Image (cartoon, rainbow, N blue to C red; front, side):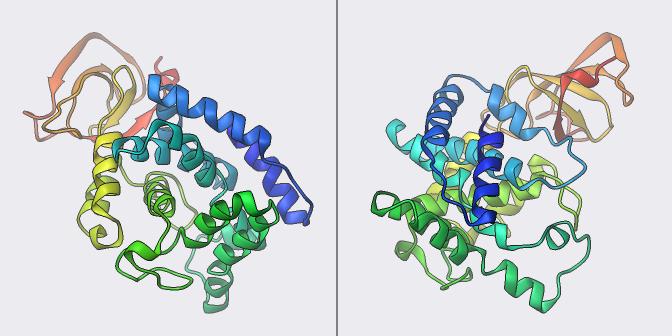
Length: 286
């Protein structure tokens, strides 16, 4: 539902029409409750079965991840719907970018990059139209590409100059982008994405948000299905707190989805040859 409502708002923003966000607020409040009580929405957001990039799906997925990261980072329960709302609208300014640029498989030209980098300020202006009560929402959209070390844009803000929600949304945005298809690169495994964010990109994000990422998104939901580097399909049967990216699994199907007569249980913390490459839907099992 969030994806459809975000899509409606994007259409209105692209046309320069007024829009309300009351419906989206109610949807996101329900999402926050659902995420705190179970992992169904997380599993859905982790699965990437689209062969094309969809902005509304990216924004809805980012909201799920932001709520999980925020909860893991210690945000109050009553803050999570607001955080999710900010994440749902963080890229509303991307409506200025033509579809052929969004879908471009190669590197952007200097002019195209300049246009894309204008989207935070465009989003700020769009969300400002909602009134003074949502000035904070406009600021999150404006600052979502700022980074702790000052390497972000549009204003190269640092640390306390950046809105706390923008810091979490930026990390959720980066995680979603890494783990899902983009026209210019292949998606990465959840393991590689988390590893990259907490090592290579660590200086760009606050420690509190990175801890929230590890607590909220480095474990695979029990009962969900994943694909292994062997191409086999497994079901998560238990988590390993000490090794969150190496759960206990049960291999239930071969590389083509054919069910195994005798599923094999493996603790990935003791088997270093196997690892999870991506979340997948149980629907692919034959």
